[in-house]
Length: 347
Image (cartoon, rainbow, N blue to C red; front, side, top):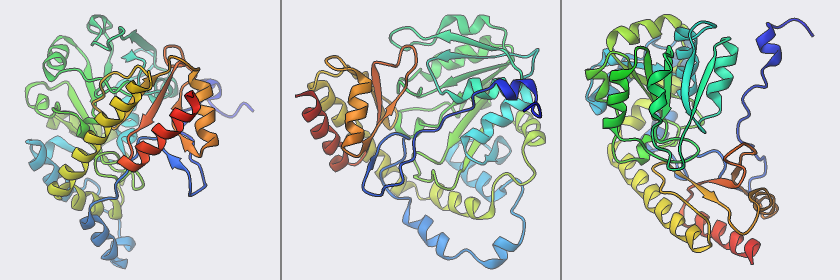
């Protein structure tokens, strides 16, 4: 067609998980929370006024920044609201990367990173994980402007300790962005590192732990100077008024958040055990999904047969992943349905 920049013409674009339209399917392919949002969220939705919709939203979401800062042990100046975690990733690539400023990250990981790099004409330095998904030592040698570590990692669910990431931040000359989209299901997080290192950005998503994937809300935690720089790059009103109000209600309801995330973690561990009983190789996950390696049947065949049973998992036809399925943790009943279907497929 010739209208687009050359790198846009060439890039394939990010492919989200399939979104089935049928209501009777069991959708375990995009890591959504199986539980509804906090009742406080639903109450806020009923109280949205016409005036809130008529006016522009707070461009920096001060009330949310204050609420998140209290929870994460930082100051409001350390917080920037985003239109989902992917918005922060886009902002970071625009802020730090170009044809002379590469990005580095371990692989396999979130497949959006290379897409955003190509849109910026930025070189990608992909450093392979080992078989145990340990932090690659070579990450410190890339001299990248931006280094990204997804932690817990997608799609493996593995976790790198806060101490290891602190050591990485200390050795890097560029920015370290720690993508904590799934950290609500882990045992620790890296929020405190922004008080120690001015080159650390922590990404948080409200999609997973808070069951708000439908409204698109996330936030950054970083030093005030880094936040000020990112503010220059973000859209003028990147988060809408309804999303801000909902996110505030969700993040303040700590009791509901703790209850549902604990329920997901318990269900995750039980699902892992049952998959192992079916002879799948399943490493420990710190996220709200598991990565199951098929031993007695091709993963692609299992995926197709699950679809025939109206069950959607995630299959990646990629090197290092083509023998595995990523399965989102559902409720106990949903997980039992998956296990029953797998038993029939493998029998």
